[in-house]
Image (tube, rainbow, N blue to C red; front, side, top):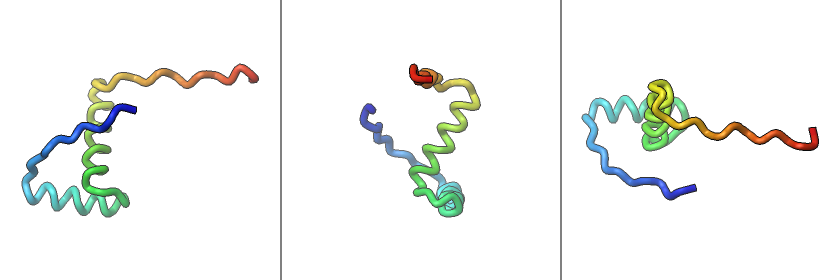
Length: 60
């Protein structure tokens, strides 16, 4: 897996507070919550490459 990209992000304090509460409700860090939300938005927009389908087990 390639290394993660670091990116400084400036957020409105009210938005950050809302994300912090949401992350706590979902038992995630704020960083993980932001990554989760961005991933969901990108998938919904059809902008994320589909991963290769899982390989079938030849024994079956």
